[in-house]
Image (cartoon, rainbow, N blue to C red; front, side, top):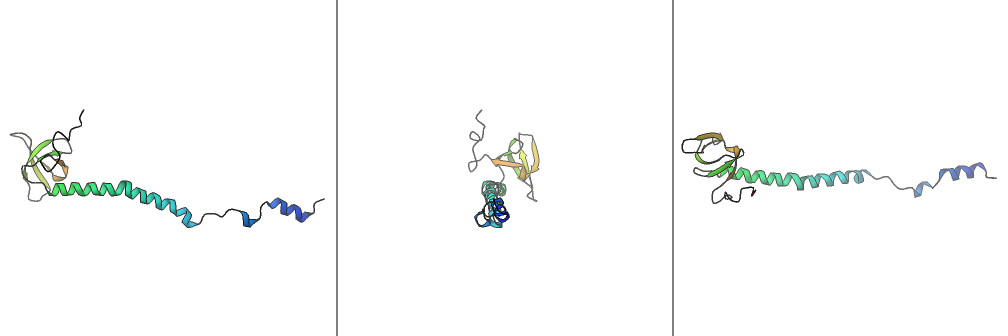
Length: 122
């Protein structure tokens, strides 16, 4: 017959020294840190680079540049207002549109993409 102390030891299973350890705080925070690094390099960094390129494009605008707005209007800059936030686009011989400088998407001059390469090709 099995005595009482032997039954208790058998019921406990493996000794405590052989049980796997629980992950520490570093083991739990590492995946979150890795996700944050991936988020930065895949999303935030390229977006900041693109925003910097667009800001430099807006700063380099000058009179007689052919531009495309975010709404798809193609025109020529006829004047840049003194406050530097507005431009006037000449769309047709008699049509001029005042709009914000930030609404300009791209320049169609020699230093920007050409009209034929900016199309969707469809």
